[in-house]
Length: 308
Image (cartoon, rainbow, N blue to C red; front, top):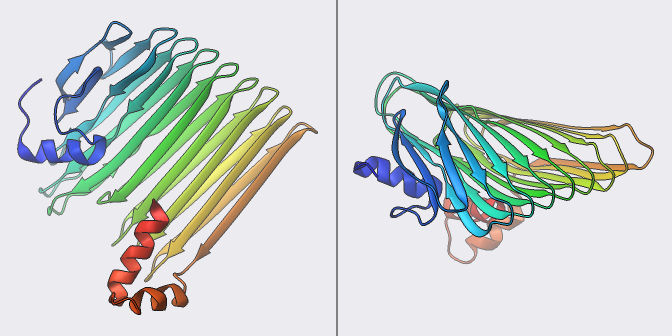
């Protein structure tokens, strides 16, 4: 692996919890170039030829292995689009850790757009973790626009942990999923915005097979003058179960728009949505302040617990 500087190493720790070269398969990207890549006997990572990105092939039956594909940007003015495709074999069960960290100390915007497509064969299971993080004291913005496409064959399943807690100035996160019979999708989004940041999350899930199910849940906090939009649409095209939920805390002059949508195209499609937006309850603050915390410390405790 190429030598990374201390800022890049810090970003890797933030977005992928990497303190050293990971075990197993990995592809680390830094400032638009490959910084390191390794395959295993069960997981092969192949660079694309015509566009930036990689193909990840996971053999049928692969168990207890992981793939790390983090991206770090420290170059102001760099804008890139990367295409990564994951082919997960029948009955495999793996963990995939992605994420992007941007440290921008310059006056130009830095932007990473990652397009990830997942193709899971019957019986396969993937836990997917995607973390976004921004830092740097420059006037240039930190921009992330991830697009995730999920194709689940019969009785496959995917857990998605989507996290953005700090430092991203502008993001549009788009996720589309198609599920066949017996397939399951679970999404847990955690998001916090502050200052003048903008965050748009769009989920479209098509439950196309009998017995398929989806559970899409977002927890978010909007502080200062930031803006959030959560747009989640579940289409029940067969006997299925779908649930989407948005639970948000609004603070200062923040704004939040929740747009949960359900479309039932089968008499046996059972779909539910929930949305709640509110401020931190006064009694919660008072209880913590009686234990010796300041109001600011009490707010932070409540927010940290809420976003866990």
